[in-house]
Length: 266
Image 1: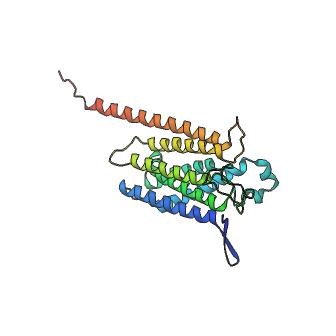
Image 2: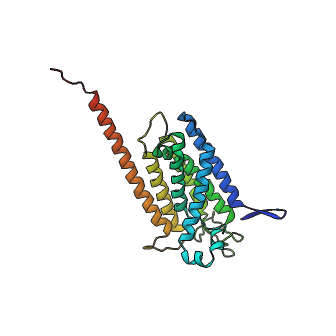
Image 3: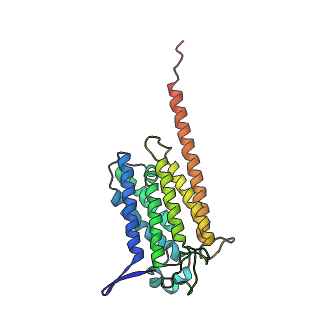
């Protein structure tokens, strides 16, 4: 693994490079989605702001999980290049997207729906930064032939120990989720507003919950990690959002049908 690329006296973190690549690809996917929906909006700017917000949220969520370390070494904990929490990034990214939707006169839920495929692609590619830097997001030891070792990572594995390359697993699943959301978000067959966002929360929450069983994250609550508890919340929120979206669409359809019924003038 290569946590840093050294260029003369400068060192560039590979996590940052992959995060930049993830943002570029997510911006392109969002641009394509705007184009097929004939929406005039700056996809690159939207993704850039959301990415920055997501990184800050992920870092703050991570450091707040261990307030003792934050109090003892505030600067080192805040500016450590390792340690980002998925759920914190998700919440901050969602809030940033909702805020930016107002700029382009797009409803908050519509903006989130449009961004779901891009969010899935960005998350998956961003995980490659965890892989290249070896920041501790890998899995438990395995004897599977594709197991990897991270002896030079930011959080190194023991010599000779091969572990699950969970960032690769998450990349594959994230691209699959992006494909599902892209197909279901076609303008030819529009979905109720909010349904795609709910589906993203469900699918990404389930994926994260399952991968945590082979991650090295400590189990804290009822035998589950912090990420698994957050994943359950994501799935529940997604199911509620889907149900509300379908109910709202059904009520709207009923109102339209009732208005279309001719009135007996006798």
